[in-house]
Image (cartoon, rainbow, N blue to C red; front, side, top):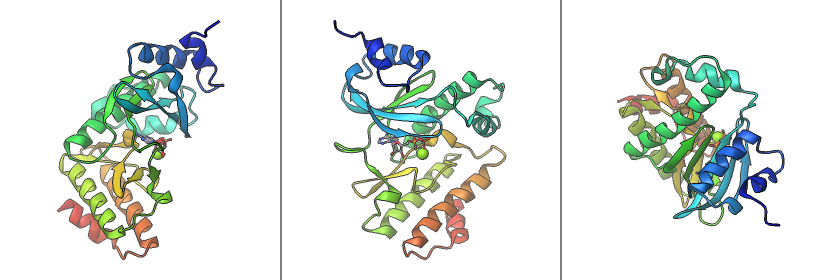
Length: 234
Ligand SMILES: Nc1ncnc2c1ncn2[C@@H]1O[C@H](COP(=O)(O)OP(=O)(O)O)[C@@H](O)[C@H]1O
Ligand SMILES: [Mg+2]
């Protein structure tokens, strides 16, 4: 007998709890992705990332685990965001807000002309966005060193500056959260991104710039992060 869509989601091992199964079922019923097409890309600390067939091409599903071990860290990061001020320390609410924030941040980044995955929809603990890659997902910067490092770096710097200019910082930028897609940087993982009017945003920006300079200096650029930061702020 043919399996129902819900049963199929359950057969992805222990990855999905009943809550995720219900939401995946709803999203696939609405046509956001084909139920048979899920394939794992990454198992992270807080979220599992899958590729799937969407209406108009491949999509990526980022599914936050409700039982995430790092919930306290997530709460400490989002509680100061002026957009989410009344958030109580409640596990589900914080995680849903976290997903919504990533979705909204992706939109803002697009407005600032930063190459990021286009966000399609979010629901509860699931975010669906554009798949970055050809047949395989694009590799992370750390695993795919650009041919022209200086040019690649300058594009990243421009993106950080663009985002700053509209009042945002990425907040978790490093060679792990930038994809190298055809020698072009694509920023991902914008769940930490926040507004510069938030109290600790300058520290986050400084850390982002430091991380990127450290990475490129390891690959023989000679960047002084303080100088780079100054130029970004100018
Ligand atoms: N839109 C995307 N297209 C292709 N690969 C992606 C996409 N989003 C995430 N990935 C892959 O999944 C990994 C984890 O995603 P990320 O958003 O960084 O979550 P986390 O670091 O919180 O686990 C990334 O390092 C990347 O390899
Ligand atoms: Mg990441």
